[in-house]
Length: 257
Image 1 (cartoon, helix red, strand yellow):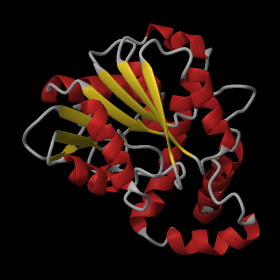
Image 2 (image 1 turned 45 degrees about the vertical axis):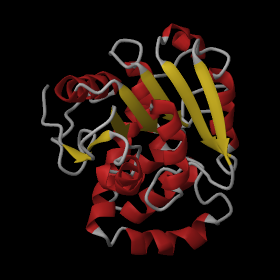
Image 3 (image 1 turned 30 degrees about the vertical axis):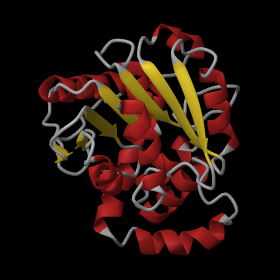
Image 4 (image 1 turned 90 degrees about the vertical axis):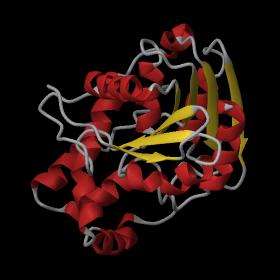
């Protein structure tokens, strides 16, 4: 089923680049990254389906719909360069098998690899949402995806309760089931990506969870045209406004030129 996909535009010259956000995010989370790139590129930052200004997701939403949405953005804008973070990186990677993406930058796609299940948190999260426990579901997502590793769940719950008082954050908690569907649909051997024709940049942080580094280790020898950069002093959300977006922008600027 079709839906409206809206995006923010930054800059008005140079190569065209699409930035695809991850879970618990919208296009607003990439304003600093996009701003840092806008002097050299025209940057398009869509809200993925079901978030912020874009239309709703429907029953059966998954990877196919997200690839089609990205294809629509590429078709409308003429962009051939794509950066994806987390689940957005999963979408971008799978899309590169069929869409006209020439340069592909991926920040730690949470693919199933090496026996690790990146959506093992899903059943608990769904049960908590069903009981209206949004703060608990938020905590389950953050802990389950490798965030706040050293903070006990009991200590995190009050902080999560404060966070979900923000209606924008509360509205994003249920959308994590959409990200989980993308990851589940992408399950399969990493050798699948040996057919990706795009020049590919693998990005990661030295403070990110070990399983995300493991995925990059698995992808690096598989992708036919690949380079890899590990950023120092940052974790999974370096590209977010709250992270070190200038550090990510510096690598994207070199790669997309």
